Image (cartoon, rainbow, N blue to C red):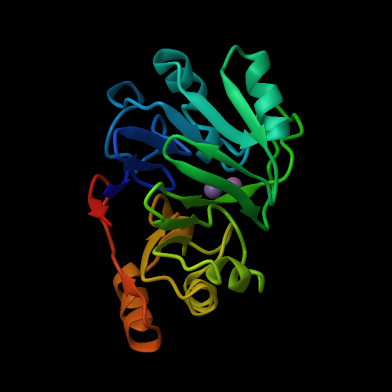
Length: 227
Ligand code: NI
Ligand code: MN
């Protein structure tokens, strides 16, 4: 069962795992880097890492149009449920078996307030174990933390890390994260969307190649990587 990863710009991602289409943090409308539109995407599941607008994005509209299930923390699931969205709450450290894999919510050092000021619970990342045992770690919005080493101990095939700085890890901490996680492949996200998080991803990838055993893949919005 192949895993196809697509970057839609900023932190909006697509994962095709077998016949399952999964979107992650689908912020497309008002995303200056978006490679597609909310209406063009199909999915059965949406993973939502936290409540900030550049991640919540088009979640509600896409979930209603496609009847997708939103997998997120308990508080965001409750909030989405009140808006008529089919949402499933998990929480940090908790895993659940889905048709596309076992999804565990991981620690993220960040905030999660919703655009309307509601409490959005704790932000998270996701560790996905596919039916044929591929491990994908989506760090989502976070600073560097030492327990990334524990996530790496599970044997990560693909890590997706923010490198934009200011709101999340910057390039040097993201390089340290690669050293803690030791993934086979790593893809940088959450940069270049706007001026404040502009980064030289190619230079970062060179350092990853020189200092770690991970293979970096720098994508342009709209491009895919197949594991
Ligand atoms: Ni955020
Ligand atoms: Mn963000």
